[in-house]
Image (tube, rainbow, N blue to C red):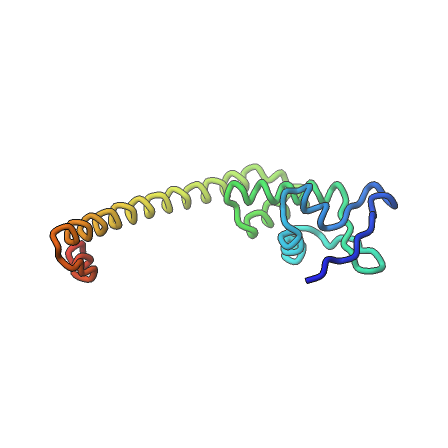
Length: 148
């Protein structure tokens, strides 16, 4: 795929950057930036006559917030909720706490499930290795049946 022609919007207006530069400054990919705009997390941005998206410093702050929220495991719907509350002038502290607590609980459950999976897999692996060392043909189905 050919790269779009380059032009320096920053020289024309120091307050705006194109999608590639906005993505770079926010620590995202251009694809992620387009997704966040399509999902309504980022309001539609201004465009040049040739259709290039132009991002302001405010847009960059929003993109950085989204990246940071994704880093702590928040989903796009959760981020959208937080941003909608903020745009509505409501300090989202209680709602944010509830979202973070729910996410934290979900991660704790996932960790417990992974620990259980790790234990079961270790048992299967040990049984398979023991069977192979005894010169037997490890039959995974029988090994798994014994674990149930």
